[in-house]
Length: 77
Image 1 (cartoon, helix red, strand yellow):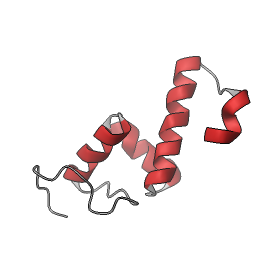
Image 2: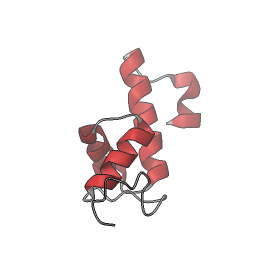
Image 3: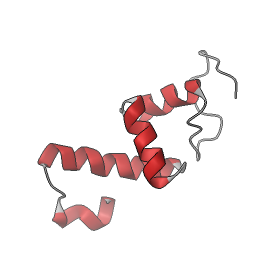
Image 4: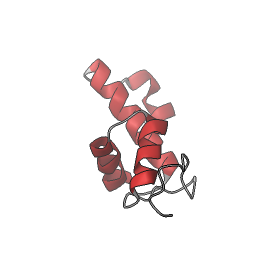
């Protein structure tokens, strides 16, 4: 997908193309994260949007609590 700023959604809603600036912007907005956070998540878990979403949710929750919530760790992380 070309870097077209008018496009507000990813070409493939299941995969993240970290090399496409318009997709990176779109995914960052969708996941409420920064570009470095998105790139770190993709590096950690791959390009699956579902896996990246889960990773970012866990990272966000852990950063807010300072530790992993053991009670809910199986359901989200």
